[in-house]
Length: 238
Image 1: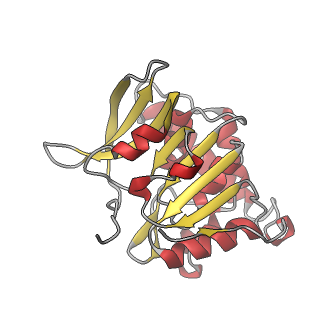
Image 2 (image 1 turned 120 degrees about the vertical axis):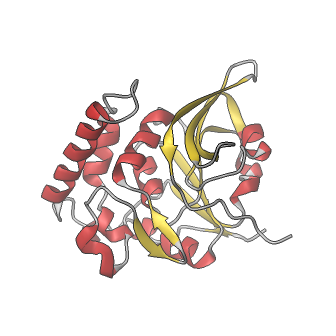
């Protein structure tokens, strides 16, 4: 297993002042909130205000390549290199809302990508542990999160299917790549009373965003929320 990428850099929030492109972020948030109320998941019409506040704060344009920055606040996915994408803002907001993250929570993310989802989670959770199988992306995300001052986020380059057993259990788990099934290691690492949000392949084709809940006795309940399309969850060669 590849080593933990330690975050050693100090907080340098001045590198991305909160006011930079704030009007565009506000419009993005209004678009996302309106989408949730009108055409989103039927029983998730009002997104959590703290999730929307985090999206107002995190500079999405710094999580995409220079060539894509003019599109950063449009409600669509964008390429980030290595055949990977950053999810559209509505999906980021919806998945984060469904997790119901609290400041006391320890959150595992599988699929760091550019680090944007990890930054949103870091605004809400106590600790974020995020895994990315594409090592160059993991290293770039690690540097980016450190530069922006997200000292409660830790990045690992490795196979997210196995989770992060030495840091388990987790209160919340989010998977940002399409999986053929729910990885058993992730279920095992989810605390009783915990929640997982994951895109899963469907037998009839396509993918669906699933909410997985583990009750206090360890029983699993799942709910199919809406059709989605994600890059595939990649496994390390065996």
